[in-house]
Image (cartoon, rainbow, N blue to C red):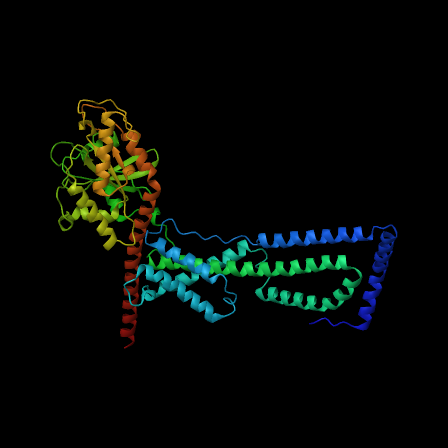
Length: 511
């Protein structure tokens, strides 16, 4: 309710001001009699101007700090195709943050929600006529629930007093403050005539208070808008990339069926955490079996001139830094095309996290290796878009046969080669990296010849595998997520079929 001034109120105000006005008049007279009036007025004026300038500079340089920022980051387990979608959401949030009517206009809120979903959907279903509709209905309901729950927690935890103060209260307080400021203008005019220094300070204080309130409300609105856009975009990416699940599952906490089979075949006890899976690939006689023996430190697979692995053979590897890993030995290949890849090997591509490709560093024939890797890359691009390409590392074997052949005096520094052998090893690794389209630091040279002690397995290969664990864990997460979603998909079909059959039986009984 607006405040109204009465004559009695004005009279009381004047009585309150008279002692202060008299004190100011007496002080001014004393300064005048002693010849200090102009100095006093000048000093007060300079002080007020300095104070006003500092306050103005501070208000422009400093942002409101009363509300903790709502930080929303992308999921590290997202596939690579999700990163452009998140960048588009980030740009969308910047464009909408200046809107002031988002939470008061339902039309704008609906428009924004639709724009977020379309932005993400186009990233994953660019070929669809209606990309925004590419999801089952229950997943949309799950998305709405997740967004609402997260926004609720963000507001409760990071905005002080949000559970007690309504948005309407904030608006009413702002309106009351504006009304009070209007009423005070009449009193301020009279007050400024007699006590202009105090009036100036009061004006500055009230101005900053009004700007501060506007700054807080603007910050609150902008951060809520940003939180809504990014949370909706986050779960939209989860939805359209196939990572949103109807059940609360942790994909890597349960063994997949094929991992369980491999562990049983390897005669080891199953654990509750999905192991990392490494696939050994290589041409005939490249040194795959010898590499497995070196990894385990004992004879695990027969090594010879002819391929000894007729099918995929799993082994359980336990080392420091690796909770548990399954090493899959595969048959050697040579000159295989994509359609000619043995079915048993092709079925393993979607079930692995790390590929260890064994290449003979002393041989330049690597076309078969390049064909194999290109086939795997095409497979993930065309048939497994929502999974991540496994980490690919190359083990360059038989480096002792590089020139000069008779020289073997490890260790060798290929990062800064000085000796002839070091130059030969680096050139061989660079050639492999170029032929297979891989980074040079993903190529590790080793020697596993029977006449020499194993070289650069413990010093180079194992540290490289451990260095790539973070990326391998992301591949494992997406692999297990796909597996759990497949199980959930068929489980729902089974439950729905049972319920439909029960309904048919009930209808038949009534008829």
